[in-house]
Amino acid sequence: MKRLLKLSAVAALAVTTLSMAGTLDDVKKAGVLKCGVNTGLPGFSEADSKGAWRGLDVDYCRALAAAVLGDASKVKYTPLNAKERFTALQSGEIDVLSRNTTNTETRDTTLGINFAGVMYYDGQGFMVPKSLGIKSAKELDGATVCIQAGTTTELNLADYFRSNKMKFKAITFDTNDQVDKAFLAGRCDILTTDQSGLYAARTKFKNPEKFVILPEIISKEPLAPAVRQGDDQWFNIAKWTRNALLTAEEKGITSANADEMKKSNDPETKRLMGVEGTMGKNLGLDADAFYRAIKQVGNYGEIFERNVGANTPLKISRGLNALWNKGGMQYSPPFR
Image (cartoon, rainbow, N blue to C red; front, side, top):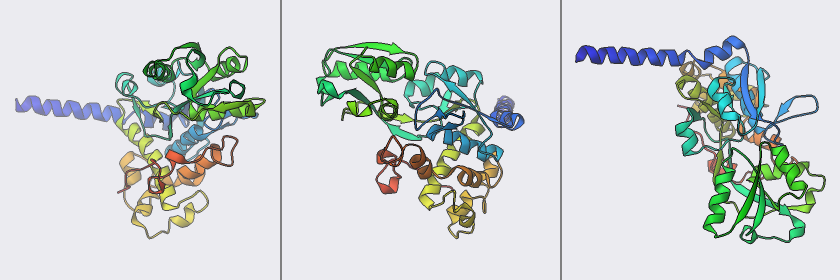
């Protein structure tokens, strides 16, 4: 029995070793991070007129590339619709999925993926033409709704109408653009998706002032990047890169002062910046991996404000996405 237990321990160690020698080595060998993003969602992932990708989800990938490869520009972006995204991750077509994707129990336990921490706390809402005079989602009985297929939106919508004893007719489409065009063409009364997506969609409308986003939030949508299960090292790298961006904001470390903050007397700041401790080594990265991510991309607050904040077309307040010590839900485990 003891011999069998020893053999089992050796086998477990072998599996762990194989897992450890996985995605990180592949990314380093390729010299580029393969990141799956939305086909086009303002503020989160969208290519500009020159083909450069920008957005909150894009910046997470840039930070991950800076930590792993030393260069935030070493990212290959793969635009994916909702139906394609999980298959692309499962098959190895991409190394990380950073595409406004909700962490749910079913996805977390049945798709062979792990979520690496919430980058944006969201919730599903409704947008309607102002001309309809609707003030509340409780007035939507009998409405026709445009939604994107393959999302949590579909079940949330059905649950909400059922619980409120209302009826609706759903018209589904594969992409955000198809949904938006159908809504603008009058094929449906309502457009529903994550509230951030509604704000993003409205920025692209010719007459955004003609549409109103209703006050009700009908679901919890914690949007998080995801990686494949079975590679604990890569999962840890993905998690702690996100955590580093949040801790940097909490500690007042920015892209502008990162060099100066290396001289900080704060022990956690020293560990985060790779001046002390073995944080990078623990993950198989360089000691200054997170310093590079912060220096090249910025802390979480910088990323938020640059892409979706008050001075952007989306004009989204921090709300739930403020740090835990400022009334929000964004929180990182300690770097110790």
